[in-house]
Length: 204
Image 1 (cartoon, rainbow, N blue to C red):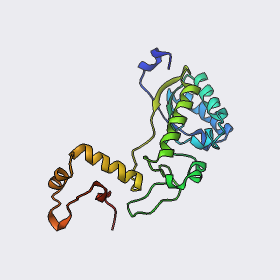
Image 2: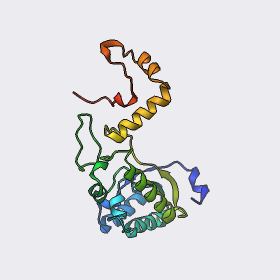
Image 3: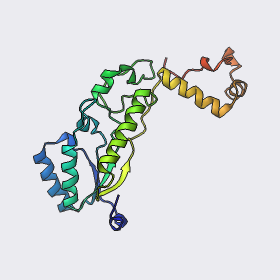
Image 4: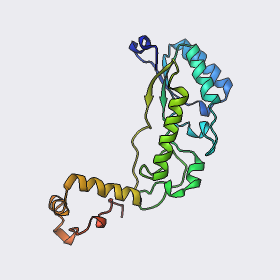
């Protein structure tokens, strides 16, 4: 991230998702951005499938083109890790990466943030894509800052998340006795004698 002088200005812009548009629309958008004084855009929030269409293939051609076009027009980039929208091939490789909803049902991949945030494959792949993006764009002169993931809509109730929940509880309460006391679990014989008895609160 270079050219610190430009970073002192007030940012005026929006999210921009080039994976949704053909080149001719992107070219027109650049003209319109310049006309209205846009000086920064967020890129790549949901573009993982575009830049990594398969497990062993990366394609930065379109993102490179947009980066270059923005730079020519004096527009800075807030570059997102696209980790809120893993590509379909990743879920096909391991369907258990799909999150489980509050009713105990595994969701289908028809939206962003369909993943389990604690799944080992997801955590491995997000480190990999973040590192790859840093290597590809870290020295671009119009890279202003990084945007990590997206909104925190990370509700998953799978076994990985249940174990992470129990780990968090151990760290918070220290002992089951303390947890039982704080949660008043003597009522209705709800008290727990083993951490594995604690599950995230599911729907009825």
